[in-house]
Image (cartoon, rainbow, N blue to C red; front, side, top):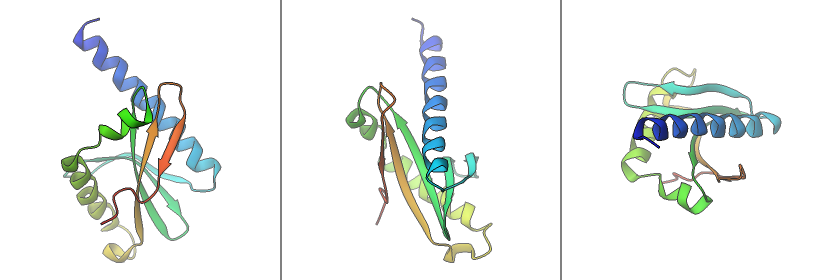
Length: 121
């Protein structure tokens, strides 16, 4: 398999994982308000509302949940938080908006593990 084919396969697997996670949050009454939201610093996979809280979700897919968790780097977490700050700047309460950062791990069988408040200070 060529590198281009592997990259395309991984891209589509990531999209499918994001869709699965999106449906999970939506079914639990937390509507998705943005997908792949791009700010000037980076991108956030999913953004949902949970009451007054805006939840920013990074989706990681790999063969196992442990392998997926290892794919989130410190630099990526910093970009996600900076991008989230840019997003809430557009909210009515601005930087005072209540927010949370979740990581959704999707394994090779499509099982999802949500780590709520994964990027807590």
